[in-house]
Length: 120
Image (tube, rainbow, N blue to C red):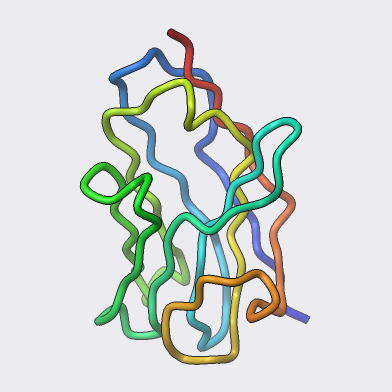
């Protein structure tokens, strides 16, 4: 059983930054998803096991950066230039397919989520 634990969420003003972390053991490609109130969960970013390949949703390209430190069993999501539309619960997920995946069904394990709120 893979346990994923997110941290780093919080309240930030528009234009600000946050860095989310996800502690995860094992050799998995990882992803970040988010779910805003009243909306479906959506893909944000994904990274391969060794970190050499990443993918991003168009809505976050150029603002968010996903990375990982396998020595620390941790993946990160650096979020810059945040706007109120980024407000959501952010989830990290692990996939046994070793390339960045964009659909929820390709991820086998999920964290409990961390709230990110961006005020205008």
